[in-house]
Image 1 (tube, rainbow, N blue to C red):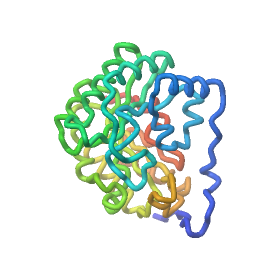
Image 2: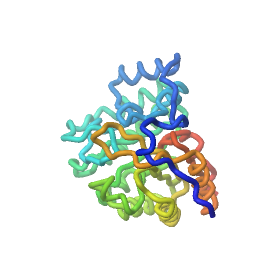
Image 3: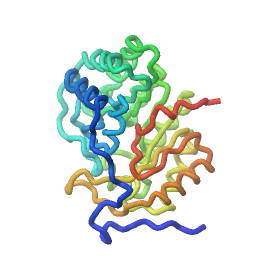
Length: 293
């Protein structure tokens, strides 16, 4: 099997052409922008500097980030602010649900910062947000991108109990780089989180960033680990350095390499693989509502 090349960052100082994205424009983008501002919502689209914000918001969709916009963890890849979070906003579930209804969202993606400062890890707000959306927009399907709750599985169970259509937790990187990239996370704890989600009979999803210094063997090992714990949906995308203070980009992974990983993932048995330089966790999320049978 011939290995496809990656382009080391030290050989080029500019992003490859395949990483160019359109600026956010259009009527639907301005509509979503207005709702987010009016209802004081946090979106990972903004806080995570997502390169697909223009495309997704232009289509009238967004990924909501609950439990504030300050994270208790300091992962070296993430653009979300780290520090002491504000107190929980108990009205947030209702505000998110109202906005989902106003936007007419058919498939809603929700994520959150890590709230290791809370005894329940934020799981109560998680469950209440899902329930509030279902009351306001019963036809809306839900994807939830969860933290690992520090391995306190009763908190995970609280979210599982309200049965979102898709439940996601990102592995983020390969085993060898986890300590470097996800300082307060654990590779095997993430796998256990995903195993529990899958065993609960829910559509289970995870994602990995590439370009952090992993080898092809590292990536295939991580893909196999995810498949073995029951993950159905896999996303693979290029890591982009938010600021000079964050983990550097080591490699620009080519579109051909992403295509190769997609083929490998489908051959492993994943139900759906979204693999490409600009792919992020919630990219084309509405396509991941497949038949589990």
